[in-house]
Image 1 (cartoon, each protein chain N blue to C red):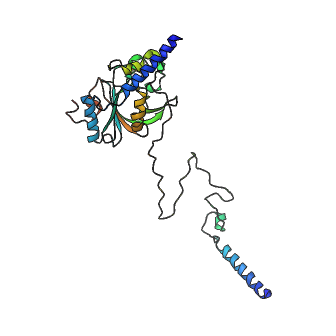
Image 2: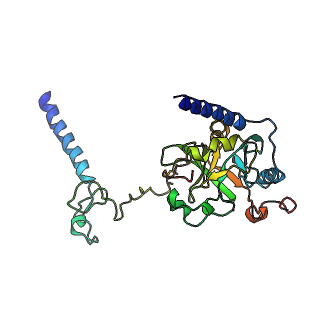
Image 3: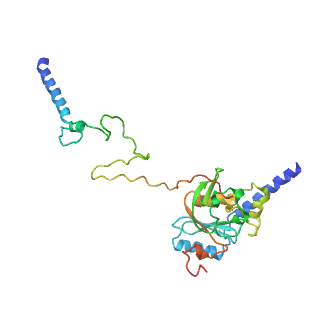
Length: 210
Length: 93
């Protein structure tokens, strides 16, 4: 009884920590790569006047922008367990149990996102529908994965746990992701971690791609 | 009075009926179809002797309605701002 009570309390505290960590910060830290891609996306017109998001895999952070390039907010996120910038062909058709650890990548690149639903009926944002990569509220259904704790921790190194999806704190999702990308098409730029920026974003000016 | 007007009314009615008959297709020797050559009409392009609306062409799609000379088809309504949602599927969590 006491143990159950303590566990429940711990979950509530953790959830609150995640909400605080996921709350909008007025001056979010943004890497040079992320800000460079965001700036170039707008100046080159690559975002096609749509709201967009930059997923910084190296720093495990998500930055949400308005169509005009104004930063809305940033948040820590969870990403695919495996390092790598490509999706294994056909992975979107495979059951989760058939996906090997080294295949759990979050693919890098430019994706036209779209609002959608998963099989559980949850509203999500499809980043790559074919590869079944979405952006969604963090799910703490498997306690052993410690997703909430990973999101709440200040380090990015432990934010690699998903099968490829981008997990976002629930409050941040509802406040920023859903209004920007959950109603209409948008663009999601997932920065690479093991390949060159320019390999994925041809619109970058030469100096920003270095 | 009635005796005087009755023949006039009858003549008017016959005249109107004659006008109605006159609006049918006149016989046409050039038509290869004996029925239409005799002045019979079909509506909606159905074969002679059939009733009802035309069936959809093979393949199950409805034919686009034809428009008259010099008219333009009404463009489809503008696509809604919200995109059509793709079928739900499992995500990679």
